[in-house]
Image (cartoon, rainbow, N blue to C red; front, side, top):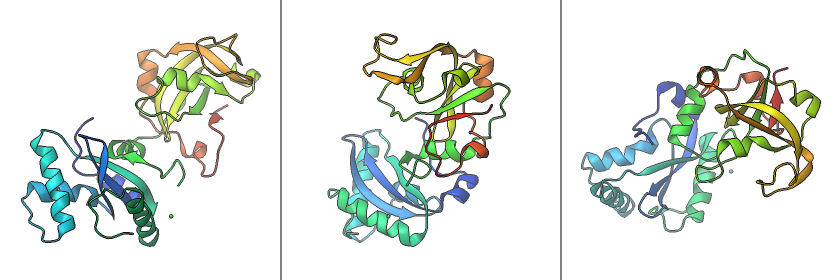
Length: 247
């Protein structure tokens, strides 16, 4: 992952108050929980690099951990746990997270949707900096829920969805969407019931749902859509259906 030391100005405008965690890459443990605006999440690392000498036990322990991480040639992992909040709500979220991570170096103890849930800082930037997609094809947009260590995008997007087969078969492309941003594009060859008979390689059996067989789109199509954001009319808040169409 590329190293990020600050948010672009257009991202800061969208963030509002947020609550974040600092994670030690050596063991995956959260060692600090905080709240802030703007580039607050990055200030701790900058403080350690500038040789800041805080007197408070909380700050010195936090900076000591950051220094140890850097001494091993590693980088602190920044996670934006929730954003788009008022300061009052952020305080409550911060307090709840401090309780949830008792080994964090905070001394003081302390209220999402997919739009404002847990993201790393690169995902935050991608979400708000991406330009809107302009559709030149009939597309099915499918929002997938997939972590970096889980199934490939193709398997996550092709299986299995409650949708009309007649309508699905009119689509030229299937767009895999994560947090409002298109992450891959596929050409569907065939739509079939999501059963063990039709898809023996898949572990789940959903005869009332559909799945497709296809391949990744050619590079010119990928360049047209991947990294672009789903247009606003398809991102209405409260819309829970993961499948959307532009036709």
